[in-house]
Length: 478
Image (cartoon, rainbow, N blue to C red; front, top):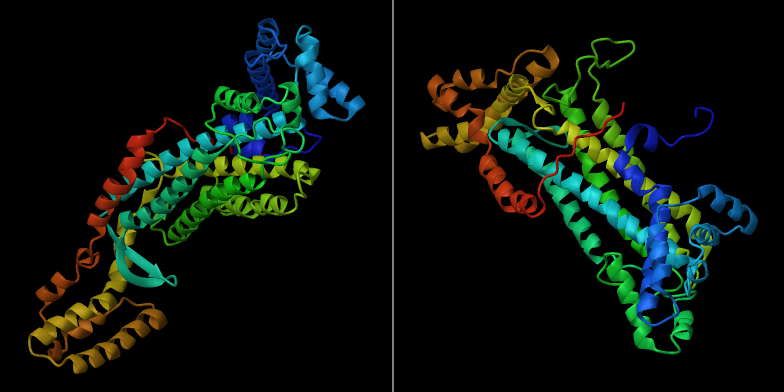
């Protein structure tokens, strides 16, 4: 259909798997599973619910007449009661006990928690694979010297691989947050209209132990260890904020990565994948624009801003509940997940060990050598002092030569001749062979290779071993 709005998350960005998690089929079959769990628990705890009714409900979980539900909602203006009605049409024997004792949030809120849990699992699986791929990239290039930058100005050398550990480490931090939230997600349970469980106390004639057991049985059937300890009609909307904050954290780390790659691509040091028939520009045929990383940056910006929605929603819930959350949360939570899913799909593509980032080692080396003379002056000065030179006099001479060499590079566009100036000055007492020995970039990378090895062994390897690495293939539609 081309004559109405379609979300780009569905047509261009998010995976089919994540789209399904936020689909009508997933939502309303989960509602029905919750109604089955409620009926089953009520039957086992002695209410007038039969096994035949439970079996009928279970057999029709996927048998949803959306047209009947929609027609009913036009009449009654209530989505949950419309689906209770539609469920009852295909379950005539059980129609009278569907939703017994429950309020709308029993299916609505519990389903939202289940959906967030399932979506977090997809995010986690992809996040672990991105971490593993970045770690492999770091290991491959752990000893390749490159310019580091502070204030986006050339600074003491690092290595291509060591820089990749910085990207990877932030994603590990995000994974820790994700694991914490996933482990601590709780169902709303069966709390009733204002969270007091009064309707269930009525059904069970004041037997509080059975009311508590009911919640426990429902939680276990839906795959949860616990329900929230207290609530109003809804679970605290802070839960949505906490989950979306994890997603915003991933978006922040992804944006940092993509921005760095975009800058490195402008330096011609590292390039994102560029396909054989890919067009970089409609006008400039030679262009190889970093489209993938620009898309990461763009989507990340959206997800980071989106986290304000559940933040405001949390703060504006009045007393036991108000409905100004519903329209907002069904958009903001879903799109936060769809956005991060899209981001991770692109990162899987960009960091693919076989067809991902392209490293131009000769360009990197040339850029290092253009700046290395400035960085090597401390070593040159120390060697000269060891041979009997005056540290202060040598320092002043190096400062003067550095200004001359810098002006030559910036004003005249010529090569850096600082080493030549120093070699021709007898004050430094240094030979060409000694200078060449000092001027090896590998002498200026500190513990970069060892840091990469230690990071992979101590930080990445335990995560990969604990979770495994999926066989996900990045979905990039356009």
